[in-house]
Image (cartoon, rainbow, N blue to C red):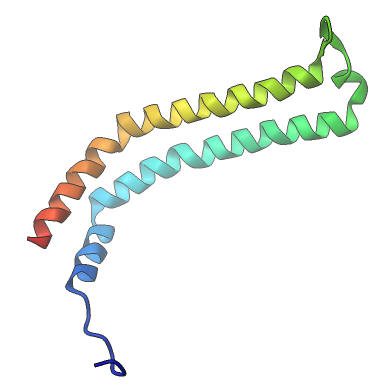
Length: 113
């Protein structure tokens, strides 16, 4: 049937059923509960850095230690906060989502058999 309607894939119904399940919705809620606030916090932190660099030049030029000034410290803290958020995300995923997602995966695999 190259020109007709393709036959429905029976796997699609399974995936839709899994997506509608309370277990999957709980995994998604836990993901959103971490990702959205953390994304907003990081965006605010980044914008603070950008705005301070633009509008508070004297503050950012203040020397802290030797040749290190506030701007350089903020820039390095951007990298540090990125790694910290990555670590926190992985820890949160392990603690709150991975086991439930794995259980759901095994249940889904059983439906395919």
